Image (cartoon, rainbow over all chains, first blue to last red; front, side):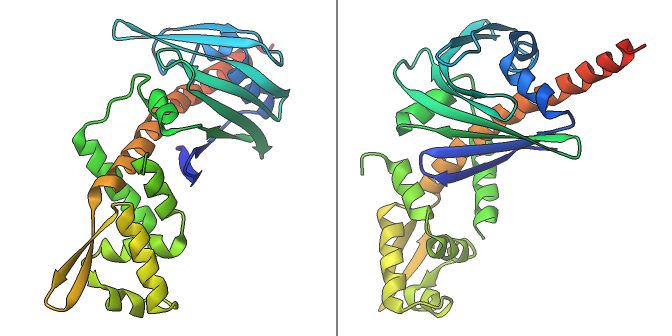
Length: 152
Length: 113
C-alpha cells in the first residue's frame, strides 16, 4: 500500500493512504502524543507537545542528523473519529502557515486517511519542503518521468 | 509572473493543455499537427499553446515556414520535484505509521486473555 498524491489546485496538495486498522485507532495515532511520537518522525526521535482541543497548540521537534526541526500550529476543528483540521508551520519559516484537513473513513476494516493541505503561497510550500528533505538531480528526472507518464 | 511554479500549475489545470503536453512529450510537432489531434479549432489550440509558452512549458521554434513546438522540461521538472519531495516525506511518515499500527495491534492481541 502506498500513498497517492494529487494537486487539484495550484495551492492544494492531497495525500491519500490506507491502513489495516480501525478508524478510531488511526485517528488516535494522529492525535494522541503517545502514538504520534512513534511514527511522525519517520524513525527519528520526536518530541511531541499536543493540546487536543479546538484552539489548542501543538509542537513537534524532530531530531535528525544532529539537527532539530520544529513544527507547530493549532487545532482548528475536531470531529472524532471523522477528522480534524490544524494549522502547520515550520518554525524556521515563521508566518508561512498551511491549513491541513485530515479525514478518516473506514471500509472493510481498512481506514483511509485523506490529508488536504492548503498553502497560501509558494514560499509556504517551500518552507514545508525545507523541513529535512533533499532531492538530487537524478530523483528530479525520475519525478519528471513519472509526472509525464501521469500526464499522458 | 511573480511565481513561476504557479504559472505552471495554472497551465496544467486545463485537460487540453495536459493532452498537448503529453503529445509533445513524444516528440516535436507543428501547431497544425497538434490541432489535427484535438476536436477543437486551430485558433483554440493556438491559444492553449500561448498559455503553455508563457508558462515556459513549451518552446516554439521556426523552421522554414513551419513553427514547431517542443516540450521544455525545466518548469515541469520544478513542479514534479516539489510534488516528489512532498510525496517522499509523507511516504516515509505513513510507512512508519503503517508499521507502528501493525506492531501496536499485534501487542494488543497478545495482551488479550
